[in-house]
Image 1 (tube, helix red, strand yellow):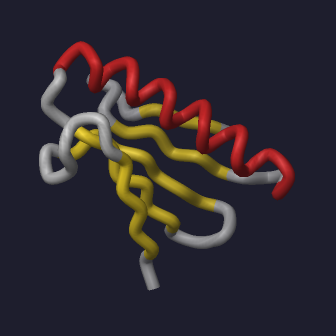
Image 2: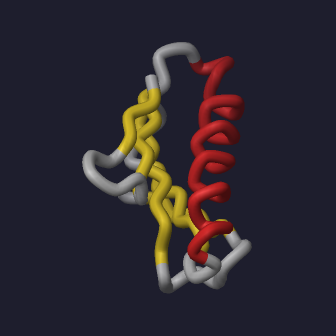
Length: 74
């Protein structure tokens, strides 16, 4: 399941129910945010792994435009 931030699409949450779908779901979420970032040309994307089933992808001014960075929460 993919859920998106409420009023402004600046964050996407990916909840994995089938492990085999993880990469496709992350790719789809990243592509969605890349389209939005391309219009703004001012933010990159941060992918956060909360656990093996939950990920968030968000636009971030701390990441250069066109780049994606990953982080893992303990």
